[in-house]
Image 1: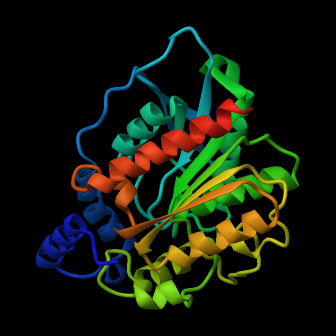
Image 2 (image 1 turned 90 degrees about the horizontal axis):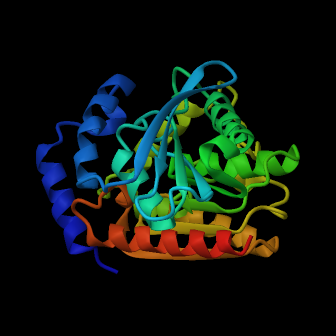
Image 3 (image 1 turned 135 degrees about the vertical axis):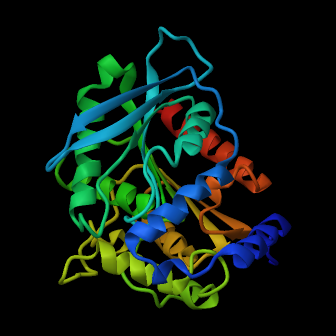
Length: 314
């Protein structure tokens, strides 16, 4: 499929204004540039309320934002969704994904807990994963005061956040931890390396480039990176059985397209209910582009429909 016209217009504008690629920047420089990208998410939706908390993590207190949907009975207990944002384990924070968190909250009808895990390279693997797992445990342990039904709590993540969400479900299964009800993985990074067909086919020109993913993985990886560690690279798990039902989303023009498709195949082969959606003509990051891309609203709608369907069956 050709590039979506709205995507093409964005890529042309970016090419005309960006001075150097992200992978030639320091993490500090890249963070500053990426902060301006938050405007692509469009006008933030109105939600009923947003609470701000610091919760205990293994090595630091972690900021979280807790979003309550605009619709629904204020006295009722609601399902929950724990959101791990993307950014290559290096970029972004819960403020930069505020619009995305609000949209997910309203479309799913869930209380959304957005987690500001610590970032690489200052905090390499497994620190971000341990932060996300601790936050998941905290949500389950505090479900009642949060107004959340502990039997209806899922995880969602995009890109590096999709990697973390998948790893959290594996860790929860292996350690007999929280009973996560669903997982939503939006263009997740599921394998260590950059040599799949989609990495080569979409290596340049589509925002997330092959050298940039190499940059991100090398910042996140410990000195002796092991691509067979399933909590580091979830596709490498020896078993994907007994994991939560999943929605896995890929963008066609994305180096990570094959990561999502291959992970959905692993889940399906292991007997996990999974819906795989390929968004043709789309690029990595389009979840955060509701201000410029119509297809982002389609994705929000699909996430809402799938999450509601899975959680209502619990």
